[in-house]
Amino acid sequence: MNQVKYEIPNISCGHCVNSIQVEVSSLPGVNGVWANQETKSVEIEFEPPASEETIKGLLEKINYPVKE
Image 1 (cartoon, rainbow, N blue to C red):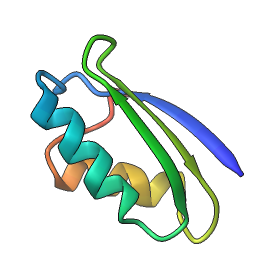
Image 2 (image 1 turned 120 degrees about the vertical axis):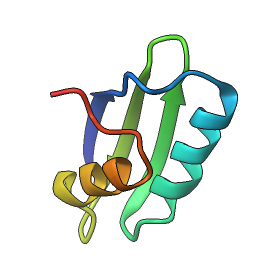
Image 3 (image 1 turned 180 degrees about the horizontal axis):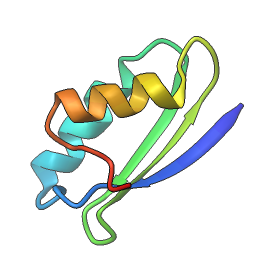
């Protein structure tokens, strides 16, 4: 199992947190998603077929791009 933590500057409210958790959780292979409004970050546990590339792509698609 892999775990990543990303900084997401666009997290500004509870709706943002919920949207990220619902959308990322829908990816096959994602086992856990914890978004945090205060730290503007998200932690994700995943295994194949999910990958960092697919997760980052989804976050960008839903307007929560990862800060590089």
